Image 1: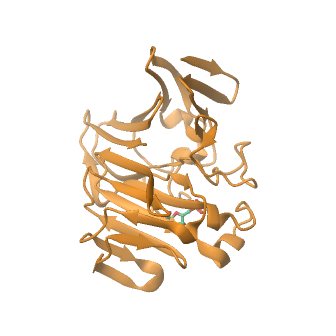
Image 2: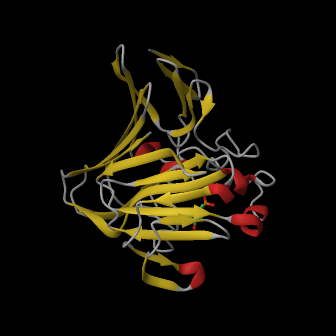
Length: 280
Ligand code: TA6
């Protein structure tokens, strides 16, 4: 049970587990259990703050996807900005929690002011021997309401995407723009990945989803505050087109991303929203 701080990164331990969080984007870039890395981070990813991390758990705020209205990059500014370390909240025999915060003055200089609202984000990372919980709160500290969408863009490490399925989505409605599919009912108990998949599943519920590899549950996530779940694998061509995606990396990753997308959050002045995921 320890917390180690460096100029750019916080490292926490709890039992035989560890996690590393960059101040840049408050991005979790490592989560190990007994030495086993649970998250995929491309070996060509930039970790120097020059661009969002290609892997780990990037934070998406104040909008999921492109947002021409404010001239912000895809997925907003949270993952492109250097957050402040807000200290250790818990450090005991079973869990360690560290906190990070971002307010308008902390937004990356080239993006500052583009989103014309006053806010405070607090992100906590809680590590136990068996789980990683990441929780985002967004508070409206201004004088007028604002609307946002948000998502935790978790890249799970998998042994082989060909042997990987997602369970928990049967009966849910999804959109998949790349294939011009909208409001499709997921009929499969197990969703396999055999080409590019980029789906927003709506109202998945707190029970979240499970990742099944070779018939075994190798990861599962639960959530509160995030209604939706994005499933993404860029597959061969899309991955090859990304300079920071390692050669063949698509085979060893699957994004299962809790998000609040379908019903944007509207915050009145003084109101706070919280969204959380628990990864096992
Ligand atoms: O994971 C959903 C998604 O919106 C995909 O469409 C893909 O663009 C992915 O995010 C990664 O986005 P990025 O901006 O990190 O390349």
